[in-house]
Amino acid sequence: SEQDVRAMAADNHTMDGFMQILTPQATSCSLHPVVMFEVLDHYTRRNVEDGRVVGALLGSVNTDGSVALKNSFAMPHDIVDQDFLGFFNTMSELHHRVNPRETVVGWYTTTKSTDAVGKQEEVGEEDVHLHAFFEEKIGDRYPCVLLRVDANIHSSTTIGVSAFTSSSMGLKSDKNAPELVLGKCFQRVQCAIRAYEAERIGVDFITQNTIGQGGGEVLGTDLEKLESSILKLNMMIESTISHVDAIIDGSLKPDTKVGRSLAEAIAAVPDVSPAEFQVSLDKGLQDLLMVHYLGAITQAQISFWQKLQSL
Image (cartoon, rainbow, N blue to C red; front, side, top):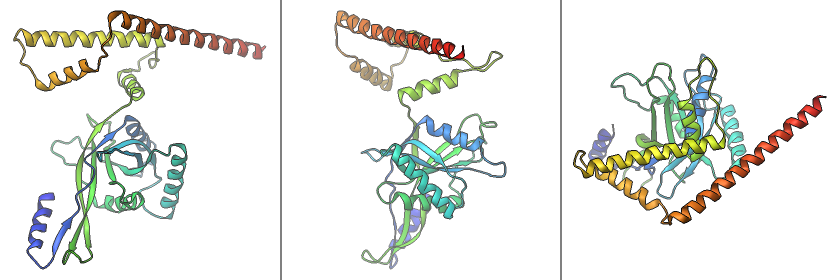
């Protein structure tokens, strides 16, 4: 454990040499939903004899050291050989051509079910060799993130996700002597799911969609989605007003965290007059109706052209 390692370092410091542990640079990482879907899709399409699947993580590193996991690509197997290396180089080059802003920031692997009570997620010995491969490809620019995903969704109540970074554990006889690397020390880092607006809409639709006798639900039109968004916003405002009223009359204990969130939300609202807001809303609604009208005309013309071609 990390406490044992620190104790070893303290003991070695009293000897002729001392142990040095490099602190991991990553403080946290944000996981986008598309990565989760790609990992689960890779796991469901695996061969039956394969116990797990591995792949590379693509993303970017923020100025504060946090890592954003935005994309991924699957690797054919979990054995580092010439085929593994050639496949990785080809896929990373192709992804770099499509989106140069996304680089390899780590790798993922699936694990066994973690739904058992009290079971801990740990990095296995088979992960160390793969982690060293991806660390070598990333270099010292930023830390390599290991994402472990519990893909056994049939028997688990939740999808277990854990992220780790590693630091070198070395031994030096003195400060000027070369470092003798003894191994890697893995440390869990905070991992939170973050989504863009388009990703959030897709995830909400998937999680709320139920497939019954008539099949899956379909996405509504732009006007229907606008109506749904306005109704949802109205419900949130009414819930917020009820919460504030309950605090004012003393029936609910105030929460400073909720109060700060409400203050930030109110501060984000632009200070405009009701007349200016109405004009802006009317313009936006007219633009939406125009786009909807042009889309309907285009769809009608395409249908008409297809009918003519079939004659």
